Image (cartoon, rainbow, N blue to C red):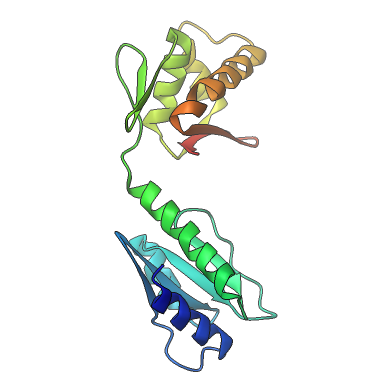
Length: 190
């Protein structure tokens, strides 16, 4: 974040945001909007709808909104300049990662993410294909089992073992499989 933008945001935060809060921290390939919470609730809704990266500046004593990932974070005011800078940079990294191309898997079971790649055995390739098809969305255990074993799914333990192996194989290329409790699995960047 450019020092001027950090300084301006920090100064505004220190002064209780008596002035306009349309401050945007300019980033190369990324702008992080500073949004006062809860005063700029409507603006936050607009930024969320467009997917714009945003940092919520939460006033003391106010409960922060739920942040569901993506290019959004919050910080409680008053905020230290270094903390503000770290939060903005984190939002920037997530926003840039969101813009990167999703992973691809070919018919030979080779998974590619950017310049990195990994070769997968047949069952793990089928599981990965199901996860890539719904990249960053939850894939149910049943759907994953059907994808991995089209002729009939083995027991619960077999899926768990293959997901564990797959997690280890995907780690070096920068992907992770998260467990979404009682729902399934989610493939995303690390």
